[in-house]
Amino acid sequence: MAAARQAWRARRLFDGMRILDDRIVVAEDDIVTAVLCGDATPDCATEDLPEDAVLAPGFIDVQVNGGGGVMLNDSLSAEGIATIAAAHASFGTRFLLPTLISASRADIARAIAAVREAIAQGVPGVLGVHLEGPFINPERNGAHPLANLLRPESSDIDLLASLGSAGVTLVTLAPERVPEGFIRALVDRGVRVCAGHSNATAAEMARARAEGLSGVTHLFNAMSQLGSREPGVVGAAMSDPGLAAGIIADGHHVAWPSFQAAFRAIGPQKMMLVTDAMATIGAPRDAFELFGETIHVSEGRLVNGEGRLAGAHLDMSAAILNAHLHGGASLDQALTMATAAPAAFLGLSCSHGRIAPGRKAAFSMLRTTPAASLS
Image (cartoon, rainbow, N blue to C red):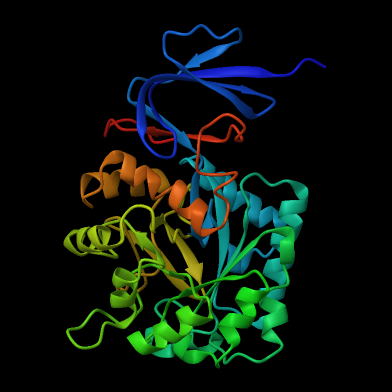
């Protein structure tokens, strides 16, 4: 059978490091074979992208709670995960970690089994699982029900690491809520660990870092803040060059001056755009049920009946444009935060986050004209 060849001509191409003008990407059997200057003539069908489009490596989102009307917590199945992934793919997210909000040990096991099955079935874009909780601080629970929060047991190491080499596992926990050696044991099993929903002090963060903690989940939100004499989780994230930090660029979770300050401190290689998206993304309805409570969209915010934030109504294309237009990032830096930065954090830099010969032809297209639909 003849190899399938295809080419795309873009006025602007972000290759994972910089934006290049007038480029043609050629792929064969879904592998990039060449990146050519725009005046070249490929010997295969060539698609001309819209003039306002930037062709980029597939966007990566490490925190996706739901989409397409589905929450992972309520649909612990490969089918549910496929619905979530398809909803975000329509907004440019080609790769993601389905994220489980604090749940019982039985539901954690079901979520991991569902992710394993989704990967085995070849559901597009599923890289692994993000387990956000249940080992978090009740004083910083956010939308996580207090009844679902747990203290870790020794057997939880096996549970949290049970996806194994089938995919990437990311665990968000509060360092001050787990015993000494817990983070190290997870890291030794190949799990990536982030601090989140935490009141950790700088000293507690330093101990967690020594055990292998490598990131912070949704910077500024549900964590100890930067103070003059106690840096907290935020201070640790902004001062430690070895920590990656996810951040929600919707203008509601983090004020833009705070976003800009963090961006200047951390930089695009370590700051990752995350959506923290809920079921409303890619869904016809603007409300859903979360742990028996109605969550609805109000002026672009997802709120509960008391008006408190409960996740985000945000897609990755919008997050990139927000970071560029309001967050102090150049367009290439904003794209880096959705491609190369999360790829590096997940240990996937050799396969994801770049457009170059030998890499998979998994692209996203960012429309930069405000009136244009994002895809």
